[in-house]
Image (cartoon, rainbow, N blue to C red; front, side, top):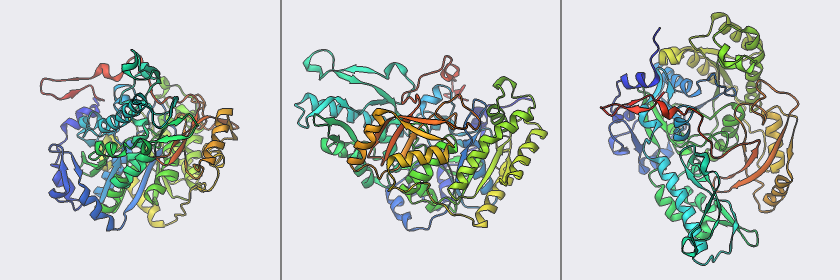
Length: 558
């Protein structure tokens, strides 16, 4: 059997002009800012106008802890949206934009797969509408203005040893993690240690994705802490008086992007913070626009429910005043077998024992969503190598544990393969058993919030803080930052902070080594394990397979 690649399927798709897709949501040509024939942004006037409309129902798609076997969370998100579309529901999909780092590295794109993709896939996975370039420029403009302030007399008395703002690049480049700037004599600035993060880890990315409008964007930018002075007091963007310039650089990037699926379902693709080092959700503006324009919104949060979903439910719902109607938890037979101890090379062979053992990972994520008081459905994303015995075993395990489940064949069949899942999701929504409530209150201390996440979401025994983190807990509470939500920076591969502990580990303790204030975004980042904010490339990067033909069509892109 010959299996077409994702890019082959995407390039064979017959796209509609984006104006026709937008019309399904009640948008006129005057509401759009076109980026070619198949991409558009929604203009600011229309975004303001639709705020008076009632909200549609939000369906959050999350997953088990990811494995090298693949889970297909974005694929299921797109396929579910297409299935609801086939059921004549007014639906919109809301996804993140992919980073060039993983695209050129190892993870792959974020446009779905098979016959459940958003298109034009090539554009989305590369430069798209330039949002990430604008964020990179704003971030680095701030870095340049900060260094210039110190060079020109340092009126704010900034301590160069306590600058916390880094430059960024939307690529994996480990050589830039730690650098020295300002060398070459007095004319070239003040020498100091610096470094680069990947663009998606920039606080400006988080700010753009959590801002409600351009005024909120400017206010959030002004609150970003960039350094500390010699008295150890924080210095902000507002102190530097550059929030206006940064907002100007982001004035187009803040507008949500509209594209379509292969089956012409409207899809908002906007913003892209990583879920393991940031909050892992697409923009509040895009999700809100989708909610106002459609009756059903299918959106995803990055990685497993311990990361993306937890942050969606604790951070984004508060910023956007969203109450999800249901959650879909994506799992695959292949990935669960890996969680049960099977090697990647052995996944094609039937292995009921490994599947049963790995099921515990899925069960924990379902328990977490239940703890939030939300109805959910398990989406069993079918792979061609899955056996009937394995699929039935997994469905039986779900039934025995009271976990609603449906098989999704959207990679192979598009929306048609997601109808059973869509009908089950509609059923649990209509049943109306929704008691959504965050697991912690904003009035809890930072330590209490972190412990709640570790114990109730990860299933850990306790949390330990390094001496540095303990000191920061005290300092942050004193500065009035204790009422902010927490954004955990943790490995995506395990419920614990050790990526080797797959499945459902027991009796583990999570160590928080450092806290970082993201006051503009409106949360405190807690770093665990060996999390890197500038990833590196693998030995054989995906970029080695990529090219472009004589007609300008991409090749080797998934």
